[in-house]
Length: 331
Ligand code: SAH
Ligand code: SF4
Image (tube, rainbow, N blue to C red; front, top):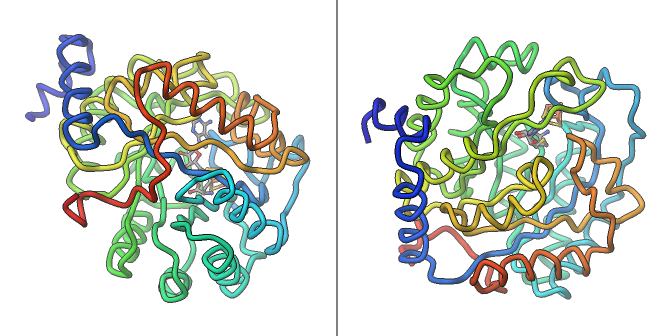
């Protein structure tokens, strides 16, 4: 796809054609199955100050929590009990968990349950990445957020695009299935930046690609900026599906935060994955990256059942498979 074609599709030149082509390609490669990943958001402490995120260090308005290694492992066991093939272990950039602590999360989860373990802990060291891979971690999710250097620097003070890209490369070399992604409609993002982001993301040849629209979060510098467009996020997901036929593409919870039901609709524009939260109810609402995240305060089993019902509503089948990368295993 040429950049000009992408720009036109992002502007809405052919939504019907774009969405049906993305859906057809998804069904061709994944059939009716939608993979489920249980997400354990184990700490909302963060050393960084991303201007868009409610977990930023400078935000004194949220109640901070940390789960113990044992509590995180118990969530992995719950994932298996609920027939989930993957747990995603996510947090703010919280370095109080040592390399060994996270290692015990990985080995504990693997010992307790036959699940794939995805880590999403932000900007850790190369040594950490290698160690966790050695002890059995399968995947790592590290979103680039945007490939525009100036916008990146403005959105993530003190951090650089080059550094984030280097980490993605380390992860790949360490042998992880690597996921990355962007935030659409991040304040300052132009249509040209977004088109370029989609192309560059596709050049990374990723196993998973996550696109979420910007959701304004109170008590952050971007709290009064306009919310992202659900439609733009759908167009971005569909274009990414066409450019990355075999990648696992989740329909993100940010979509539902903006419009109820948008997450299931995302399954009709190229997504093949849903990631319900398994975070214990006692702390889930505090994982306030943006408002509406974990708004649905039910227990993990009911949240999962709601996700399965949403999948069935759009005519698909909730899968219990581990759902590894097709890009690597060629089916
Ligand atoms: N600290 C880690 C992982 C947790 S944040 C990291 O930053 O990589 C997980 C994701 O939440 C980020 O990658 C970002 O894309 C998303 N996010 C944060 N604030 C957001 C907002 N206001 N709207 C939409 N997505 C947001
Ligand atoms: Fe921290 Fe991640 Fe939020 Fe940035 S996006 S403030 S690194 S949790």
